[in-house]
Image (tube, rainbow, N blue to C red):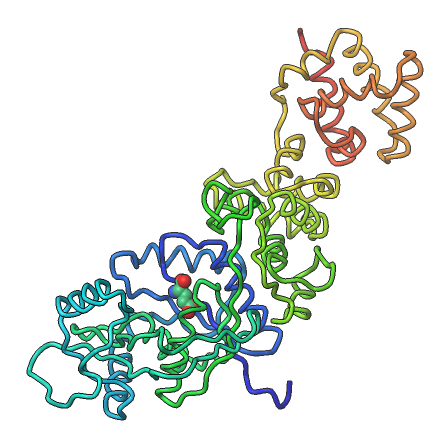
Length: 469
Ligand code: GLU
């Protein structure tokens, strides 16, 4: 690390109203890479499209980043606000001869293309103004004086060397006639000024890299390291779209996937470290490298996500899970938990978190501890409380009065009660479960009794025993 120049990565999302999981993954890769190397991770909002770039759309990106825990260094930069700087660089390029003023009108360009098409020639526009100095007093754009011969090679860390023939690239516009920069120009100026050393982004930008390299060279700026990641595909191998499932990262937050699980899942989506599927944030930060990024598109796999989520939930501290659940309830506009409910949830967490696939799963299993007496019993629970079962529950309340409240003793008391009625324990568990949770699916009766404590358990058994069905 000592001799390594500081690494700076970035995420440069265009605000579109939500944060796509592809953008989230790109952000995550850049964040991991920067954090691993003690570098910086910067955020630039590419808000040049004034119609789409509303404050709400920008906020959606900030929310997505915050939820995923991708903290960026320094303030978020607005690309739009940097337009004067983009203009300044374009003008400096004019002055040093790496760019030129082009006075061709839209009509002339269209006519050039039509004629080329008719002759079966390339429609790539070659401006007649490239080397002219007899400038009229008319509107102009500033174009890059791109090399006309040879090749531009993108030395990509994921794709390998990608060679583009310069004859296939036109003299792209840097500054439009109204003085606004083009996206392609703004990206390079911003990345340079922000000191970005590594551009890690979706491979839909691979072709742009060739043009962007030409702008770096024209300015004599050092080129960043490029790493273009294959896009995420759906389970059928086609480009990800709504019909494959959720495409916005916050949709996953709203499903109750903890951010740590989403980070693990997204990190593994297109990157690998041997056969490791399940890992902590600390491991990801220690392992993440560009070499591990795969060349073929990763497929979104909801089953895998559920497994990863289950593992993270099982390995998260109980108190932290309560915090996550509070945040989840707030995010999804559900009523929050009282302090007593939070305490109950935390005490019960050990028996809730093991097979949970998401946070709502935990809440569902936690109903026995979140709800107050008298419990609203569901229909199946009511049906399991026939007169015989109610009689046994009644006897049990007396036997449990003085039993010590440990798992062993409770097991002993319940097994003896079942035996004395010639029942298997399972037959007794149904009505007990109904009495303690109001449902027929719940954590084990012993766990519920231990979490609820003697007083609440006896009160619930008494409620159920006196039910009038
Ligand atoms: N704004 C571009 C996007 O959201 C990213 C540009 C880049 O990473 O260079 O796709």
